[in-house]
Amino acid sequence: MKRYVILISGRGSNMEALLDAGLPGVCAAVISNRADAAGLDFAASRGIATAVIDHREFASREAFDAALAAAIDRHAPDLVLLSGFMRILSEGFVRHYEGRLLNIHPSLLPAFPGIRTHAQALAAGVRLHGCSVHFVTPALDGGPIIAQAAVPVQAGDDVASLAARVLAEEHRLYPRVARWFLQGRLSLVDGRAQLAGEKAAGGSLHAPQAD
Ligand code: GAR
Image (cartoon, rainbow, N blue to C red; front, side):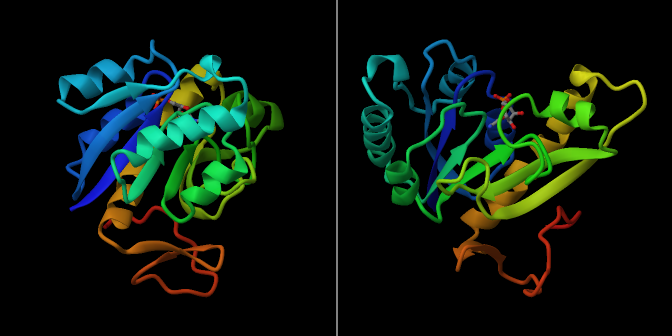
């Protein structure tokens, strides 16, 4: 069984979706940069090891990232899932986990990287919004996209209503992608996400209904 570690900063609803999905792997630990992250209690209630590495206790990003990597590597994971982890990671950290570090982002990348994605989408007037799961590279929210789910923007949507519909899709998409990885079907090849069984050239890994 492959082992995975989940990193959170807050609520942890995507983490819950991952833990409830019956993934073919072992969640070795949930680690947060904030002691008050609500998701830590849920993970502990499932008997999962938790740890807090508080970024405010470190003088530099590199020092924090080194401590975080040490906490992660203690569990020897095959996969690290950023799940609402709201820290920019240094290049050294990202390279250390190259090909086994995934993130979920609440927009159809490359549109709307960064924060406040739902407000950005509403301000831009897009008709389709959504979420993306991607391999993490040093470029912020810029790594190879693995899968996306689109959410139509409705007349009268505000940030809360749009965020809620996107979040529901996140909870479907992230476990599906994690399952692919843990099954050994998903890898990073020459800077592209490759899913075994998918047609290569131009074949976008949208969110198919069937696994
Ligand atoms: C999710 O919407 C996730 O996509 C987003 O934060 C939220 C965390 O919610 N992540 C980012 O914006 C990463 N840049 P959760 O803690 O309930 O999963």
